[in-house]
Every structure is written in structure tokens, then in C-alpha cells.
Length: 159
Image (spheres, one colour):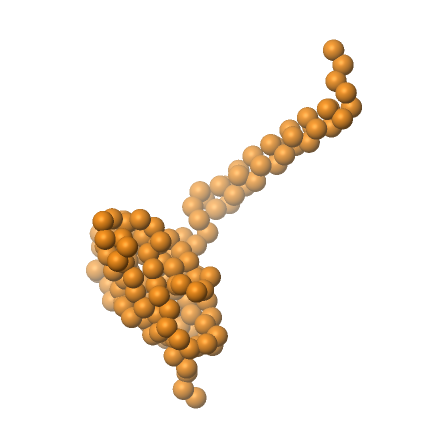
């Protein structure tokens, strides 16, 4: 049985794509240790209250001037709420969960991460303009999930 040249080309192309996909999955899983790259570190979700950073979540200005916001999600709230940050400066959000999987999405921006018990998710965003943003949980977390919202207030920084 003879296979036409064009059919052989398509078979080899399909086989090469399958190999390429498998290599991409293997490299991604191997280099990222089978967890999303935003999960920088782990912690004990049952001991968050005594954790040095997440025991008292809030907005912190570090000695070098960086602004870090530590956020704890729990059924059915965000802590702290509201969050107040200055406009025009990079803000690093560090988010974790004390109970179940939650989402942390700042509406109207590209700031979005998952809050997974036992992991710290981190992202940095700069808010160009002052204003208020809704913070929403976009991962189903229980019966009152639809009411899990918070507020981010971006203020103009005083000179």
C-alpha cells in the first residue's frame, strides 16, 4: 500500500505537533514544579493567625520604599477591607487563603490570582489613576460566594 506524498506530510506534521505539545507540557511541569508560577512559597493555612506577615494583613511600606499588600481570603471576606494604596507606584499583592480556594480579582484591571490554602500568590500592579475598584472572588467558594467582595481605594499620593 502506497501513501500519497501530501498525506505523509500531514501525518508527519500531526506527529510533530503531538511531540511538541508533550515536550511543552513536560518542560512546564518540570520547571514550574507542577504549580503555577505565582505560588512563590508555602505556609500552614491553619496557623495564619500567628504568621508574621499574614497574622496582621494590610498595606506595608518596606524600608526600601516598596509597597506590599498582604491579603488573607476566607469565607466570605477579604482581609483587609478596604485596601488603600497610592496611585502611580508599583504595588505588590501577596495573597493566601485560610480555608478553601478563593479568587482575588481587581475589577477593571488585569490583576487576578487564585488564593490557595497553603500557598502565597504574588503579583505586582501599578494603578495609574486614583479611584475605587471592586475586589471579587472569582472562584466558587461556598453558598455566599456571590457576596464575597471587597474594595480597593487608589489615592493620589501627596507630594
